[in-house]
Length: 154
Image (cartoon, rainbow, N blue to C red; front, side, top):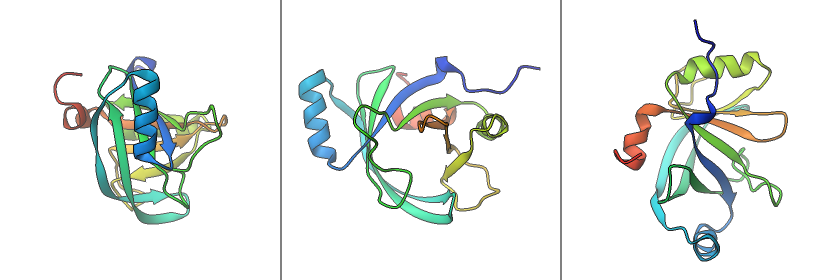
């Protein structure tokens, strides 16, 4: 049986948390020549290290891919805070078995720190975050969400 793990070939975005979404989009468009595709605001139940809650995500992905940049507006008091200059906040991976790969990461000492879409500790989630010792967050996203975010062109 194949070991459940994060697969590098499933890396589809690098996440950057910003204070000013519009300013960051303008700066990166000018500097990198990127345009912006899927973006929006989403109210989500979450389960964080300190318990259940809810957050409002404001996000934007570059239209260019298959590897995208994702901007997320900072959410004070959560893991979604601006990192030190030169540091990505998270890397996002498509995943066929979020619960299984999440358990495998936890077993390797890379703790689960957030579930998005549920405020229950024991409920399955389509999106989870783990924190590596380096400080980088690893986001696992159910592959089923791919068409919802990017259509069938990914």
